[in-house]
Image (tube, rainbow, N blue to C red; front, side, top):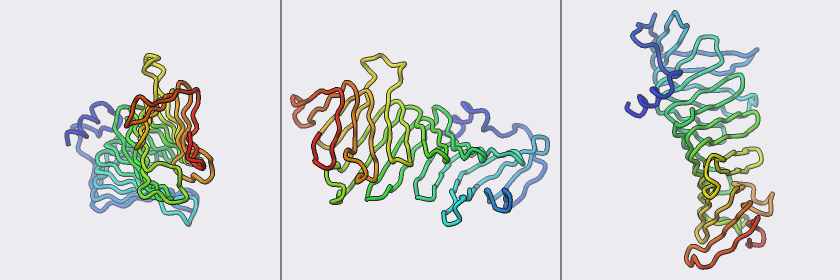
Length: 275
């Protein structure tokens, strides 16, 4: 697959041994790793190949289930065309059509992804496109795109590393979300998602020229630019504002661009429907 081949050229750690014949192959492969008396993760694959020298296992058409510490919670599921791991290691690499589905239904999609079991860390290499999204509750649909990702489950923080786009859509905005627009699109160089607080902090790279260091937010009636933007993506009832723009803020009407305002900080007040 051309897209995967290009990704493997730029990320050699994901490559499989070249010019080698595996020691043996197994159909309908199943593998379980335990931690104490419970299952940490398990894998099923259509076919698996073992490379004896490297103690490396390569599976095709793979699904991995990562069990939660909460017995009531569904396992996180990772599906991919290929996966490889060193036996007895705590690190798995996935290649080709990778889809991660978390217990709450949130998804990640990429051509390459690593999972570090001991740290509960999901990692997409820099420069590799990762997309995803999900229904976050209260009728809010999120979607994002980034070049690279680093997510640690313990902290609930997701770093979107480059060329970030995040869109929140609230079709048929419910009464409890009154004052929140039906669509917000934010673009920036980087963003950090705090899944515990339901907030996203957007920022630009300091390597850019100062005049280009502006995060942009697009709403149905407004364009907003600022050095930094914080966006709340659910649980609006827990905070008075759904968006905060900070430093060198410009707010401009889309239909009549001669109407605009500037400020050092702007709070988009959901309860009063004002800025």
